[in-house]
Image 1 (tube, rainbow, N blue to C red):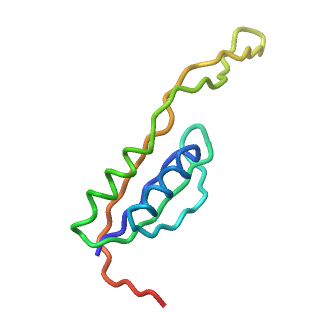
Image 2 (image 1 turned 90 degrees about the vertical axis):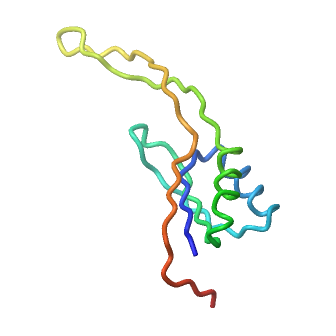
Amino acid sequence: MKLILAIINHDDAGSVTQSLTKKGFSSTKLATTGGFLMAGNVTILVGVDEEKVQTVIDIIKEHSHSRKQMIPTTTEMSYGYYPSMPVEVTVGGATIFVVDIERFERV
């Protein structure tokens, strides 16, 4: 048994979980915050048999998209003046962990 943990952008969470459900996979969705943007993410947990791991990863990849986003930054000009200078960064996509499960029970 394997546990798949996928950290994805909150904008993609609905599409990922709906697709997993349509393909017969149960998942748990946790709201999380992290990364250098401290933006809202979602961690999706899916327990599957080893032969289904790649199917779940493919579904997550298909529905987790990278996108460009402008964020404000500051640079000191002089005399403590910090004008806001937007910078374009890439956000989204998925970070996926596959972990061995020693024991799994549904009660």
